[in-house]
Amino acid sequence: MSCENCLNRRAFLAKSAAAAAAAALVGGCGNGVFGPPLPAHSAGGVPSGTVTITVAQFPGLATVDKLVQIDVERAVKRTGASSFLALSTICTHQGCDAAVNTANQIECPCHGSRFANDGSVINGPDNSPPTTIRPLTQIATQYDPQTDRLTIG
Ligand code: FES
Image 1 (cartoon, protein in one colour):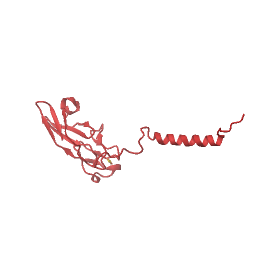
Image 2 (cartoon, helix red, strand yellow):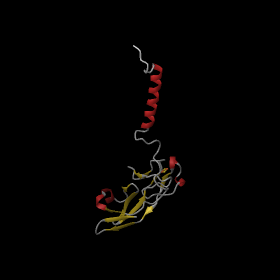
Image 3 (spheres, protein in one colour):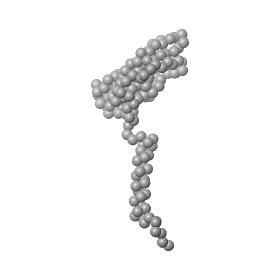
Image 4 (cartoon, protein in one colour):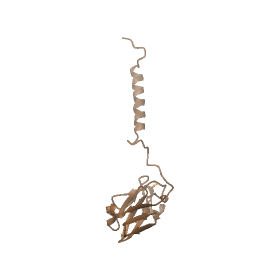
């Protein structure tokens, strides 16, 4: 049986290997993203606009000193009966969106900087000393105990 347009074994294997390599590249880490996330903001930036929440809708805010992620760029902790500390979670290294972790800290996914729940630096990028970067930026808050509404920013 003749086959004029068929691939020979060597050509078939070469094309299969190239296709597999291309598929591996496109697949990357499984989410189509190569390497660490890209910075989303300028380093240490402050989120634009204000956000108003009802404190009771964030159960973690019933506990003093517990950080709660409010949105992608803001975390809040209660500091007293009617006082709160809000932090921008925009990393002061290169501007990635950091987030509250299970250790009640804020951690950046890009290069691993970690911040304490008051915004101070625990370690800089790639475990560098805390003095490598600035603390997280604090954001003004205004709380109305009558309505349990907290305005951030
Ligand atoms: S941008 Fe956060 S550690 Fe580099």
